[in-house]
Image (cartoon, protein in one colour):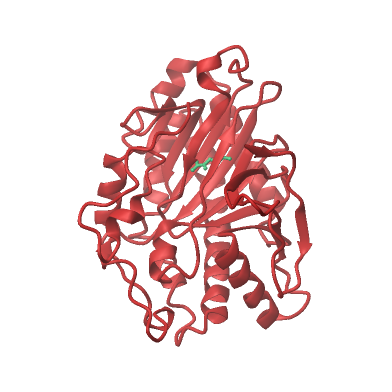
Length: 349
Ligand SMILES: O=C(O)CCC(=O)C(=O)O
């Protein structure tokens, strides 16, 4: 069930997060760096999700990327299809992955790495490929810096011996496996199509370390939070009010594993709008393919077991590509899992 609206909390005090509240974190650190680090840890431990304001990504950098990607989505279908199929990178429409998931959207997935962007730009903007490359690379630089800053602060807040232990997974450019995904949800006909139930992008967690999402002023994003009314103990889908000036940042599965479950990877989904198109851009900060993901020693507190076995990012991706979007993939990597997974739960498209 969908809660009528989400209160987007002001920059929250550190004590506790009221249920149903999406924390807002002021990245300009008005109360000092230590306090900012504590707030980020609390948001990522209790929600796995927060709204970042005063984040330092220049509006002109975001505007330039939005202009370039909107121009691409406005082009005729055959031109867009030339940048596909999504294998898994490239242009795609409706089909999400190779296992039967569909949504009310078209999208473009780019390897967030200058050489790869330059290659794709030749197809995406044949008239002036560097126009597209510059817009993407500038944006990726800015969001990578924001991701590293958040991860360093989380490292400090978690009391890691080396606070850069988390950001080092995503700071490299050359062997980075980070991706930039741009989703375009056209005005939906789903209201008339009962089978589609208005789902723009089905429920899932993000597999990477950290996701940084920015969208236009069209609502649609929902996160699964503990029931704000208490009592029944179930979870509730909570609407995230749109804010084009903010970044919405969530913990991914790999960060949950690296912190032994201390930070939580949150389930989310997008409902299709029937009235106005939604444009969202997500930077998925990922480790290099051969990176080993194991709980950092400081996060394995006295007496607590390691929750996940060590895996490489390449292994995790392989599992992810074999499963449906809504699958709880981390279950397969539980330290005591033989087969695992909450399995074949399908999202309600
Ligand atoms: O488009 C959005 O707002 C979010 C989509 C999403 O969750 C994803 O692409 O993984």
